[in-house]
Length: 112
Length: 111
Image 1: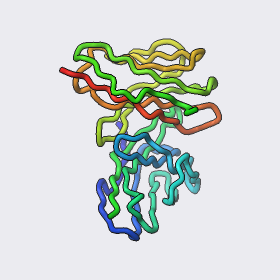
Image 2: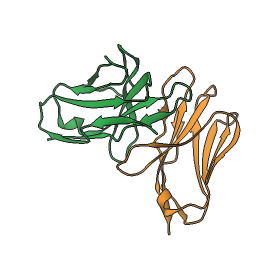
Image 3: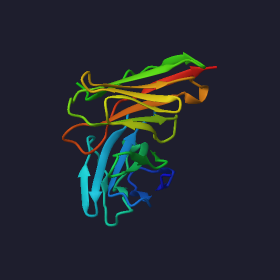
Image 4: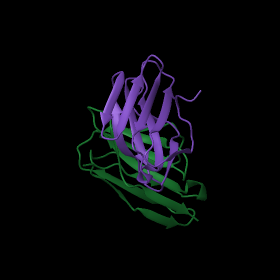
């Protein structure tokens, strides 16, 4: 069973606020990912990490930043939120043997 | 050309029928193929993965891979209304270590 947790599940904030979306996994996976997905639209990879102190930008340009100080933790930060950042953010980690992605339940962000 | 292509649908089938979902990919060297199901407002969940040419069966689901023709399909037998969801095809393209997702096919199973 997948054990990957995201908080908050829902967040409504005003423009200009700084926010951090938390993601933790207890499976010991080295690789972790952040995807962005608008309702009814495709998944876009925005950040990924192969391990501690490793972070890479994904296919979709994003104004967010990530850090990977501990294997189990991969937070995403927006320094100054804007309405265009309104979306669902999905965190995932992958099994090194199969490549299977395990997703968290998502964080739905609304910026007013 | 998008690297992983799926018909966006919706694909509508009656309850009890076989639903056939198709996916083509651009890179002949791709090795790993995944099917995910995503209910509206929820996260994707893995249905199955396939690495070798041929069929792989798991309950009502069968994945079919044809590397020569560069397509992978998912068959759902005895479709149920609870199967109504968007089905995402994902491929690890050669030279990449991350999954590339298709846009997904919406499946609607009517009672």
